[in-house]
Amino acid sequence: MADFTRRPPPGPGPSSLGAEQDENRNITPLETPAAQANPVLSAPPRPRAPAPAGAALGAEPRPEPTRSRPAVSAPLPSVIFDPMPRPRVPPAQSAGVAPPGAPPPFGEEMLDVQTERRTAPPGPPPPAQEPERRAAPGMERRGPPEADRRGAPPAGPDRRGAASAPQQGYAGPERRGVRRADGSDAQSTNRFWPAQPKTLQESGLNATFVEELVLKAIFFAGEMRGMDVATRLQLPSALVDEVIEGLRRQKYIDIRGGGGSGVGRSTMIYQLTTFVTDVLRQILDRNRYNGPAPVPFNEWVAAVKQQTVRGNRITRHRMQDKFGDLIIRDYIFDGIGPAMNSGRAIFFYGPPGNGKTAICQGMVNCYEGDIFVPHALLVDDFVVKMFDANIHRAVEDEPGMPSYDRRWVRCRRPLVVVGGELTLEMLDLVYTPEVKYYEAPFQMKASNGMLLIDDFGRQKVSPKDLLNRWIVPLESDVDILTLHTGKKLQVPFDVFAAFSTNLDPSALVDDAFLRRVRYKLEVQRPDEEQFHEIFQVMCRKRGVPYDARAVDYLIDEHYRPHHRPFAACQPRDLLDQVIDMANYQGQTPRLDPALLDAAVRSYFVRFDKPADSSPTAASAR
Image 1 (spheres, rainbow, N blue to C red):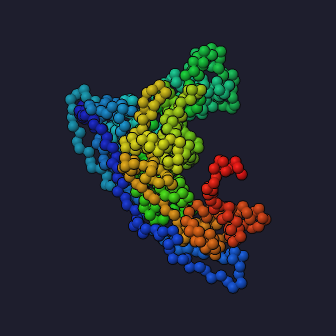
Image 2 (cartoon, one colour; image 1 turned 90 degrees about the horizontal axis):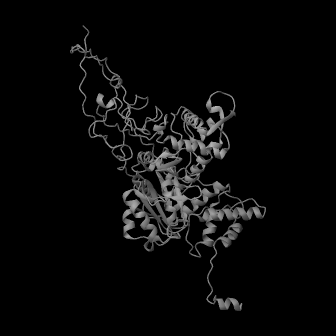
Image 3 (tube, rainbow, N blue to C red; image 1 turned 135 degrees about the vertical axis):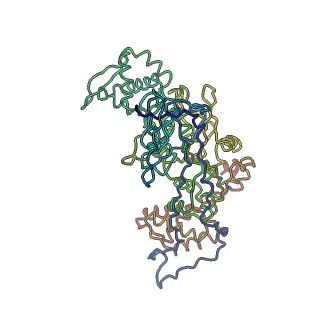
């Protein structure tokens, strides 16, 4: 009689998976805060280089001096935190049976699904198997699950409750969009990676909606090949071919001929028939969206949570070379570093022209990695366009990268800058009656990135109303948008918001706003030494020889006598005017005193209103 092994009884599955702990907020800058900057022109005069005998100022530029910079410390070794071991999933759950107390379906509660790759460590050979136990006749022999023999827990039910086969590259409960890339993405254990759908059910769309997209694509193009329809919808060709075949059976489309080399339905050219006229009119009355297939709203919400901008580990060493040629003081690094690690909000204030906007543009470069942004979202039966080529910078795929759902665009973390043109209407979903679909607002397009409200206080709307609009998102990380039907839509506000103003902050903000914006940073004017450094950097970028004596002449003649304060933008602006005037006079651009004098006369102009500038006096003249 053959020996059999008793099948273990089914047990309750794990209640839920714990969210990954946020361990990325306890980092401190590597440098101590710098001393308070000296007031403008309060530092001792800068040592001047003696001019050679008989040499005229500006005639022969001396070699560019080299300035010593603090040595940059070696890169810090990265620390890898191993995820906690997960409990094994009993065979009942691996067979697709939901355990008691299972979490609600996808979209009702967002969960952080941790995926881990388990490999058998090298070691001595496994011990000898214990003697097989005999069971009652009639019981079949069952060995350990396949996943247990590999050293990983068996795969659990996926998002839709169907049993899923183990797939390479990740283990554990399967959910679309929560898989890890094979090998190339081993550093991120919980990175969002949208899996390529193979069926309509996996895409989250119904057959009727996809059929309407196919009909609109062919209608606007006149005729299309099957592969071109799949490219337009960014869906797999096999899935689109099935939809096209169903439309052919309904006599809505017909084959006009072959479209090139190869065989199969993908190379056939399709066109609409007369039977689709009434149906197409109803489709276009509903919406005229013609583009990649949208992603269900709930899947995007889960993706935003996994790609969050909160809780980073940005250090001073990592920020050192992310600002290009900007001359950044130590106190600015120490101010923006902790704010970026929190991912909450920061408030910049200070005189105009000192680099507040340029600093924000460099801050977004400190975020490493990339994110996935959907082309469009499906909210109920409405389409919301998300991807904006003017905001989202797409990145090219590396060779050997695993495939992913092409309805998502892999791009850098976005930076959205809005200024004086901002109105309250622009912060809500924009519905266009002509095309009958929505355009996502600025803060929604900036998800998982940075939003800069520049020139705060100069918008058409009052600062008080604008602040009231931002108080709830800054407090709860949730924004409330309204559809044209009146329905309220709750969207995640996962944005690092930055407010920048050159006006008096006491006249713009109140205590409620300051409490929610935890970090405030004053961007001060440069001193004389930094003024020289900025001039030197701009001369190198413009290809003009740098002459420290000419800059000293500019300061002595046009700044000190008039008590004129420095601004970080002035070296760039004055140098551009010097280049323009030199080109006009047919000269080689250089820091010549005469050209500097002409540039100052054109740049520093005050428009003082005369005392007798009344309408009567003006008409009398």
